[in-house]
Figure 1: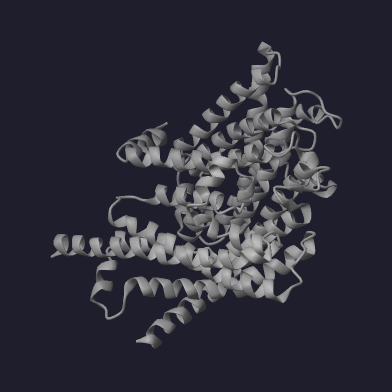
Figure 2 (figure 1 turned 30 degrees about the vertical axis):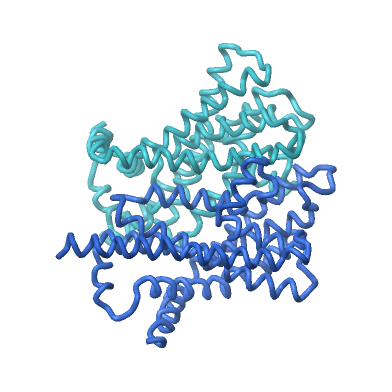
Amino acid sequence: MRSAYIDFIRMRFLTMLAYRVNYYSGIVIYAINIGAYYFLWSAIYGDQDTLAGFSLAQMTTYIAVSWMARAFYFNNLDREIANEIRDGSVAIQFIRPYNYLLVKMMQGFGEGLFRLLLFMVPGLVIVCLLFPVSLPEDPQIWAIYLVMLFLSFLINSQINILTGLFAFYVENNEGMMRMKRTMVDLFSGVAVPIAFFPGWLEGIMQWLPFQAITYLPSSVFTGRTPQSEVLGLVLLQAVWIIILIVPIILIWRSARKRLFVQGG
Amino acid sequence: MEYIKNYAKTRLTYRADFWVEILSDLLSQGMNLIIILIMFQHTPSLGGWSEAEVVFVYGFFMVPYGIFSTFFGIWNFSERYIVKGEMDRVLTRPAHSLFQVLLENVDPPSLAGSIVGIGIMAVSWPQLGLSFHALDIVMLIIFILGAVLIYAGLYTALSAISFYSDAPTGIVPLMYNIQNYGRYPVNIYNKIIRFVLTWLLPFAFVGVIPASYFLEKKTDDLSQLALMTPVMGIIVFGLGLLLWNHGVKKYRGAGS
């Protein structure tokens, strides 16, 4: 059974490879976005050396690595699941011998692998050539960052799966998904590091999983997080992964019951 | 007229969809405003522009953008009209092809953004202590129309590319991201970008330049260029229309 799951990773990777041309323009688009924020922040810093604990060099690195991380962890699992629920193909998945949710996760991995190799890495290279990004010199930080990056991929995928599963209950959750995307982008700190949020908002963010997606890993990468706190952040990510499994399983179970009752 | 009536009929049967679309659209635009507000907590000025001024420019930006989005929902033009052959159907009718395609894709919820934009300007106006003249309304309308024409021209030209080749469809999202640069004061960018945004892909004219007409003059006085907005609009739209018409002729000539 395990090889079947690995197959899903491979299939999704190959599918995306066939359409890789679409992602070349994606690299350019992300570079343009990073550029916009870079100029904005440069103007905001003006003569100031640091803001909210970030120097301008760290800020530039933060923006670059955050967007490139997004290039990696981003996926459309929410849309896919919602579509499969809406057109009914999810019903067949119940009959099959493998677990639907695990399959979606595997497909997510396949997509992530593709994005990492063909989107994030070349993107990061190009962005480093265009903007004054300062990459960390300590290999330990790179190692920890990669772990955190993987964990943030898991968290983002979980949130996507959760959002997609809501299609069981809501007729058309297209609008909801769009709003979720906007919220995740804002609250995960892709556009603005959470340290810049007004105090009350920053407090709320501490209790939500979104910061674990972008803000925490990027803070470690830019060196803003002191060494002593880094492991604590990794642990926080792990905790969120475990917490998010609960609603997913709950909704899945209740949706199954519902489906069986209706479909017969 | 018929198109819009039909559209309204189909749309009102999905009333919830309508409001959700407006809400999510406003939320996306709102997020950018929130980012601006957060940034200004940490600095008094953005390249010499105050918070109220940048918010005003943002409000102005939203108006032509909303109008444009309402009437120009032709995002997947190549996919829907060329690949699937819908263009042939359009060409059998006596009305001009571009306007048919536009009318088939009207998207009224996007107007909500324009209304919010006007609201933002109305709130910022007294905050900035600007005087208000009746002429200002005329100028606003002229600038907004000019900006809409710029959007229209650029995206018509982009869509028209599909008449000439199977170019990758990634160009439209690319343009879409570049246009966001016009929301902010153009002097924060380096000279090359400023040149591109002013004269090649004139997105500076859909936001910051016309808006600066109403604001206090800065050192590099953008407002002198503001009066060029309608001119740029006419030129860009003219070029776009030319490209479209020529492309249609070519399309008609091939196959049949």
